[in-house]
Length: 232
Image (tube, rainbow, N blue to C red; front, side, top):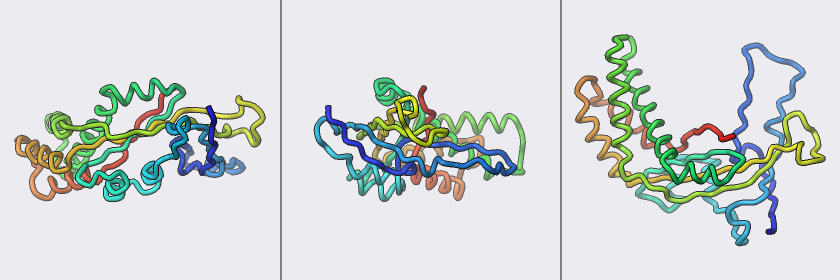
């Protein structure tokens, strides 16, 4: 199988490079992550001579709902994009095709709802019962709001980059090689909003009316990328 190697900046690659640092400066330590190129060794279309679709680049550069809808031709949809990295493509695809990806989306929605409600109640109460109520209602609303969620499309790449402590690659051991998987889930946006509204009506023990409710809905509609942990 012919391999087409495309060089792209690490900032546009699927692989997410996370650099941690302490509160005090650490001189003489060079952060090379931004300058280390990532090579795409092959991708989903390589075997068929098909180029990487434009929507992949759109997701990586301007992942907002309006732009994504246009790029994907899903003008009436609410879109979520999940990415995951790992050494085994079959495992990544199984993760997407089973329930885990949907669970990640629901968990992200639950987190947003809970955070917004807690922020609106800041300073009013630290009652444990209220905390439990927020947790329970956020989870219930998240689960019911994504009924009708469907996988739309996906793309994968096999990529490599030099290890952080290597200046010049001389063997495969000098590189980090992995698969990156990107999947797009979507559902009818009107249905999504309708299910949120119905869910809000059933919340009795905490205030999610008016401005609070609109704030939650707007945040969820704008939400595009779901961060997921990498696989070993």
